[in-house]
Image (cartoon, rainbow, N blue to C red; front, top):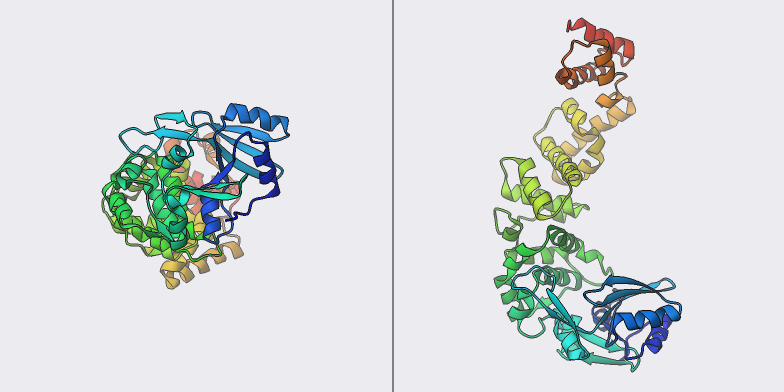
Length: 408
């Protein structure tokens, strides 16, 4: 059985002192008739030993993780992730990272530490042969996702494997073996132990899983429905078990679409506090990212609530290009209403932002020292409203004269 590999990879296999194997997604994809996939390599060779050999033969290397005996190998435009055969030892939770790693010379032990049978198929480049200890070849051809060995052991070790399982179902249009699915349901609580960054990274991959391999049938919505079936949302600290998916199916920005669906499902009393708990604490968003999403989502809901045009664009003009595609999938009437006004503002060059006024807080302070600085924002907003309505010219002189009339 032949797995196509590049000439560079064949040359690399001849440099290795022991047989070199391709393992994981690339082998799986080739067996399923799918092009592409990251090339992961493995062998019974320590990274220190092989690093010296590779450098002497003109390869570039980078230590990826010394604990896992893992390096990245570069040759021309190609790169490969190499890991020495190893055994992993996990803590009694689902935090993803092994607490201990041991080198092994036994390829069976290396295969045993992997997650699913279709990801534990090895291709021996030197001998041009498949090595498969867990019937992964059969499962790949039948499009079945099955844990290696006992599902309770595989999924208990690593909460991320459950999210990866969901992604692979959507990516490759797979069916989950019954015992594997049952155990994933029972152990989905392990997702709670993952770091926020890992939760978000895998969730984002799920949302766009149908884009990974464009030439095959795939369905990200199938993966989303599986998240509901496994009741994983409660382990993102959300106050429900199932999301009502509507917007995520319609919009190009599926992250924002999913957030809207989650907000619509939860119906929180305070949107800002809800997004802070979900996006920052559970998914690791920075404060800056959180604020941006809050603006987009607020702009979407304020439009649905039919906020007055002038008030709306004073607040959301800079972000309307992101909000508009969301609104367009919700209501064509509201979309047309706000888009008309948005284009009108641009066409007539209307002053729409406080920052576009010809004076700022510095001028107010210099010319009106008796005014309480806490009033500056309100003063500038009043000036902006009058300039926008055409009642006041946007010149330094006119704006200062207007403030002077207010007898501060």
